[in-house]
Amino acid sequence: MDLRVTPLGVQSQAVDKLREAIVSGHFQPGQRLVEAELCRLLGISRGSVREALRRLEGERLVVITPNRGPSVTELSWEEAVQIYDVRRLLEGEAAALAARRATAAQREEMEAALEAFEAAVAAEDALGRVGATACFYDLVLAACGNAVVDEILRGLHARINLLRSRSMSRQGRAPESARELRAILAAIRDRAPAAARKAAMLHVQAACAAAKEAMAERRVA
Image 1: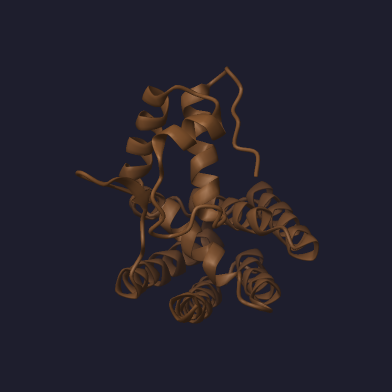
Image 2 (image 1 turned 90 degrees about the vertical axis):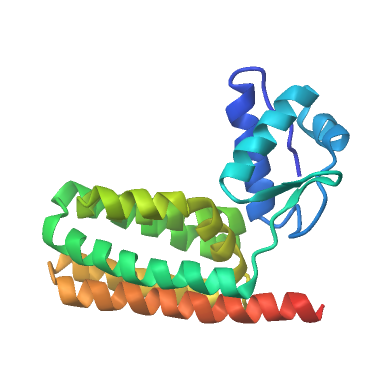
């Protein structure tokens, strides 16, 4: 995996590259992140690496422990369940509001995001799947018009993507996810808030079940 960054926007690129490496599983949960090795992989200074790690600590993707240094966060199943519970409630509400408020242009952008997701599923592109799903939800949040719901979910964004990566690693989960997201969009297109809320909540429940299986498999392995 090529982690090197270009001189322009070194800091933000370093954060993006490391976040991508964590979400994709290149760096495993609990794995120590050795600064000297990251400097070599990224091609940047130790100071830049440390700042990138501090930013990822703020996103709860990295833990920096005294006398041990940085490592990739290990989400417990209890923490994951809490995140899924919040997602189920808030994404259900966001989808319902989007069904009432989304413009024609916003619905077309959602369609484009789902087409990108389906293309990533067909190509077995794990990072592409996570990115396209995140884009779809960004559009739903923008359409819902509730700034508080948006703020809370964006605060969980990195950990949600980490869990998405795990749940969609399950055999057959990605095509199921595509069908579930299609149901959400269909309800938004039909301006059916109750159906949109139900579809979004069912999608999160299914993702939670898939993530539980994936995390259990990892513990056994």
